[in-house]
Length: 207
Length: 96
Image (cartoon, rainbow over all chains, first blue to last red; front, side, top):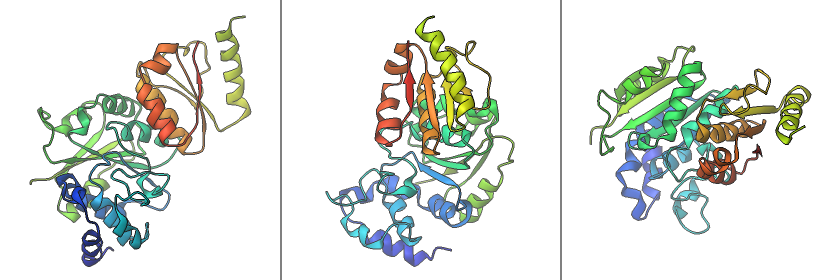
């Protein structure tokens, strides 16, 4: 279990203009629960919403998945920790991110190969139509090894009438909405996956 | 024999010869290619076709993606660039 102090200490070492992006902290609690209580050693995690990676790097450092010393050089030329994670430098990122709308479709391919995959996306990222190709296909074929987690901090300009979860459910996914700051609630939301259909966790962040 | 029909024969054979080979299609060629547990037809979703190929490659498979040229290259151009190139994974792309 991650000690609170470990993550706080790691966050303190990350400095620079990029650090205080609100998107950095919206993911923090979900990432802690994922790496502490959800992901198994053979599972793959894909960080699709790669911008604002400070919380992600802090959790990886606290878990020993990147060297803590790397935190000091965050975003510098020689650092392995870029403003978007690169899977070739930080394998725990799962993919190299940048443009939005790529992680979930790649996760579908990984799941088709038999891997259990969890992919993190943002609610505004879902504006990108490429995500819906993935949601539709995964839902219709019942791709049970795929789990998506949507960090819903209401940052999408046009919003999702009826809630993000309704869009996934329509396509055949199971869906659980939870408080994105409540660790036990987040863990329970992931545990709702039935093993028969893809599952989405919508983690609501009230800022 | 056309190039397409030759490809369909070879792709079917490759599926049998190597269990790492997977076919990814978006309706084009589905009638000519075998139904197979490693043939994934994603429907008319070309961006997903390339992304799925990338995900399969990340897991160590050898994906072959196929469609008509504009649907293999121009529609999913960013997926070719980022999901294959930027992830440092490979796929065989076959157009006509």
